[in-house]
Length: 360
Image 1 (cartoon, helix red, strand yellow):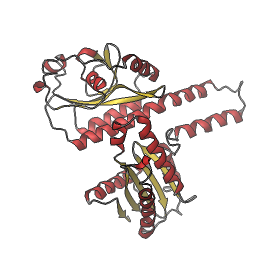
Image 2 (cartoon, rainbow, N blue to C red; image 1 turned 30 degrees about the vertical axis):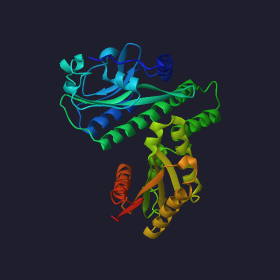
Image 3 (tube, rainbow, N blue to C red; image 1 turned 135 degrees about the vertical axis):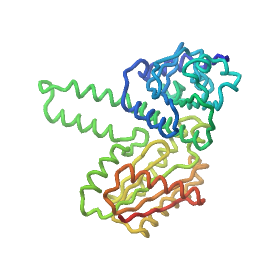
Image 4 (tube, helix red, strand yellow; image 1 turned 30 degrees about the horizontal axis):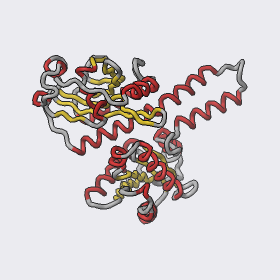
């Protein structure tokens, strides 16, 4: 068995891990929901979020097995933290690093393992504090496309972790509010600020998916003047490659520039742009025809094509999947799925955009 080595920046990494305030905390629905979804998407018995400290790997969330922690020496995830890159083990019995690992020859009998590092920003540097991983008792294949999808889940997880501490601080503030110490206007001000924080993407300052869900509920479903809706999902192609090969702040700068560009193209009171997470943005507009949607998508693509000489956008291009419907029985999740399906169609046919419709 190969014992995982420790990174050169181990002490700084441990400081970052402690700063995250994730270790030895209670279960939280947002993390359990993510591992449950990962388990379902990849059809595996076990999905987990692991954190690696000095001597152990501890599970912030785990689905499919009752275990809270293991020794770091036998941990698969500790290898991911050491490498700083994904680890794919299709058959552990045929891998000299793991064939005699206690987790392989004894319960839980891990045969298949894939782990993607979780990054955490601390004092202007990024550290690998743990993994998002999946396992199976059976050997199996795992494609590049599946690995890319798991990386995207990990990116979403990193965004959740980034938002977690600010949200907790304001939750504590609200609990401290008392009628004896604050006037009503002060309470309302803090509540309003908390709502804005919870509905804002901290990196780009755009509204986030929580805001988008509320927007759709309050406009599309409840306003009879909104005859149809167009969901445009925009994906930044090659972003993950840039984010992995260069420093994290380079990838973050790309997202900020993309967000700024998209915001500059909005029509006041007609279009709404949100960051869904990772490299995905969503633009929502109402009462548009197919030709008008074509005009909007072309305007976006032309804008980013003209930006190709900007070093920030080197190697970057945009895919757009648009879904236009007048059927108000569509759920929020269905609208997202249909728009996302159009992105895959665009890629399949070698185009930068695809528009689907359903009139209901």
